[in-house]
Image 1: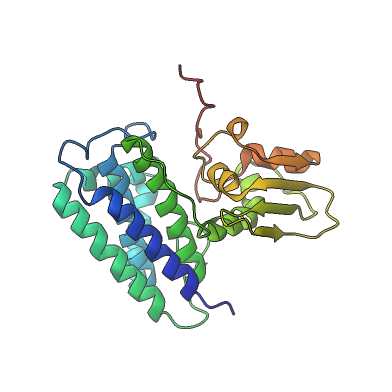
Image 2: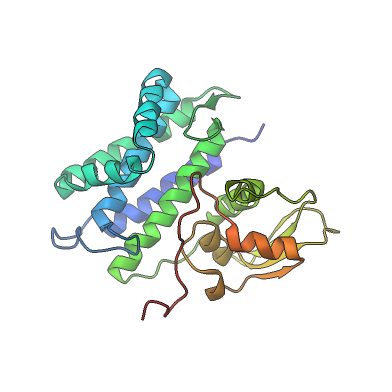
Length: 264
């Protein structure tokens, strides 16, 4: 069984990097609009805090988490936005403190989880490593939204390995959420890491293949960039179709980002 410690450590590092972006923001900067329609920087941080809190309940108090699921089922189209809206209404200092405390409590709970533990979620149950990976993926993606709002370019790191692996593992989910039958054969995925290392998934003799920068693949599967703006290449019609629908997150597909310049 894989040791979840590395991904938990990387989750903490990703959170700290985002924290450095928002820690010194002025009150006038927290309401700045991000690329997510209707969401400010405050909404982005509030969403992370809300999801960390839900994750903590899933790990430590499954009865309480079940009640949260019931609330979500009562308003399935609004519960994520409602959580972000409620948190965004807090004074920035309180919101920042709430996010910091919640993510630290979650990291501690994940580190203390017994081997082989599985936790309930809004989708399928998750292992400790899967829970930490999902939180890292969201922290990175929403951190990009914050950086975009501030006009900051973040330097990618090899922490993306966790997100890339998640993007590959959710291939079948991506087809299924669109009502499609996933391809039977595995794909070959070869991604160049920020460090220059090559990350490889799938059999060498696969007919369908995806190659390109790991950063671009992670941007694609988190819907932070449109495919036409990325340097990803495919061989095979199934792999080509996958890149049109790929997503590493649970829930409905959503609209994704338009191509650069489309809105202008």
